[in-house]
Image (cartoon, rainbow, N blue to C red):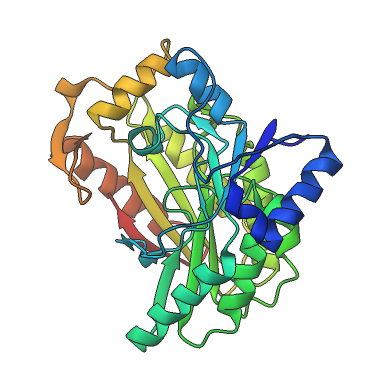
Length: 336
């Protein structure tokens, strides 16, 4: 069953081949389709923010990426690669609640060749290894069955001398990516967490077991892979729970010579995200007591509430120690 109940096509999207492919797939699956007379989808249906949120999460907008100016993407990559924006997941803590709380629909961009041409221009301009992040404001995997955008992108970077691609996902439909000629120029990371966090906060996402199964498939297909443990929530007995998670990963991940990267990200929130979360998930149990946190300005101009220096030092020491005890070849990219 598709994650999308409706697909809406902006006017100019129909000039591109990908739109025809999406439409064909929608008809095959019996998904409701709508064609706009303009290139702007106005808003989600619903009387309340909560109604609009859940309506939008089941809606795909098919459009043309109007600006081809790529944003920077530190520390993950040199540039964002805008293939998709938005995500079907309903994770209560998601940072997209700050950026897209009023427009939660998944936008897919049909002018993939223009986007990749711009990536090629950036690669040529730099003249050295240039890394692009494909999931800075999205999870691009759930829409792949409609768009084929990841397949095309992975093949593009496979033919690029200096271009490299990476993206992160919580989803597990990786089978169509396993036979691609990626030449190890793409790194695919899976976002994982302890089962209690997945159950409580990561609604409409696969289980930890399914995610690990997908990671092992990707390892078997020769991809470089990484794991993002996020958000780390420092609640009661957190060391026991995250220690058990690392033990499971150490036991079940396929052993290869390639290094598995780790990115560890602590829970944080903005005031705007907190307000959206409380409006959409009024009974949320997310720990968002501002008095328990430290306020810090971020790279995008707005502030966020992060754990205190004492808590962060404890978290960093814990993960450095436990990851150091693991038998799989790995590299810690950052703990923040």
